[in-house]
Image: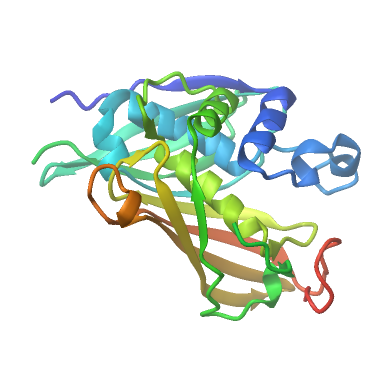
Length: 127
Length: 152
């Protein structure tokens, strides 16, 4: 089967961060309180890591459907913050396929090319 | 969900087990999650696995407080089976690793989401999602909202 995965591209706005805070219950002020966040080393709000990671989940679900939901695995590092206004591209490159399992190197990078998340994703594609 | 007093994540020893929390993800909650992240995939009446992990983490937030300057630095998620909207779920979490380095506490929270066999619409019991979250938190900084006795 084809194992190419189509990237997902999305702007991370403060409105999206606020909506995610409401949906997840994570209202940490570093995400939702600009005045608080400006006084931190980040100098402003940053997106929840799990919000940005969701782009990888969306990308893999879009390619593998229910197989992703019942057999997917993710292991990632949050390498850098994503800020409101960043446009993030989630992408995947096939690393290996063996035993009916496809493993990808995955990442999320901003418009400047900074990698904010990287890691591995695997899914059972046969059997 | 139960709401025990919140304690700084830095104060939990390795091996600490958090109180199990039971919750149900409704269609409205899943829709709000998908709208927030912008995911337009068709999940039918199933729960996106990362939504289960993210919303399940909320169950632990009633027990864990994060000092200012804490960072979520790593995440692992393993999907063991598809979750259905409306299933009754139990979140079990524990401190799998804890170490200190250069004034920071590195804490790995391991948790699993288990479908309640009695209300499981598919008839499959057992673990649906396994996850590990790595949090780095400054030692010696008490969160602003911890209960007395909490904090590092």
